[in-house]
Length: 155
Image 1 (tube, rainbow, N blue to C red):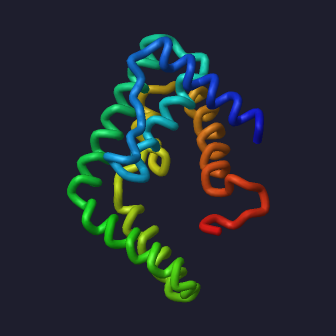
Image 2: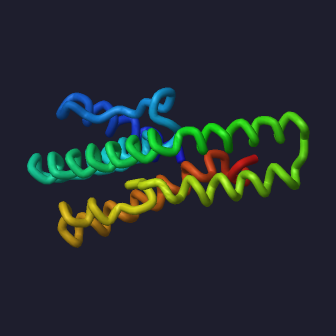
């Protein structure tokens, strides 16, 4: 786990030094704005040609634009779900909270996400590169969904 975090931080530094990297802005663009950024950071830590890395950045930039457009269109619904979740957490209504969280998750999965759907990345990588990337992506997903070993997501 620590190794993955160090690798990701290194990728961020390398990425920012080598490119005009994209950045996440959760405050203005919502909770999934960083998905494309995280995917690009995985690409940045791989041994890729400058041309391939540039193509990967373009894919990530497009994915982030798609997310931001979806979020702008659906922000009211996202905010409504978040407000309901916060109300239920303070009311300690576990059953209804669980139901609303499931509904929110289903709704949020209608949004474009390069982290969940990395097919556009496949178009810029060789089969061997994509296999390595896909393995790193799965590791990242596990880390994001279970930040503390033994802790259930949403706990």
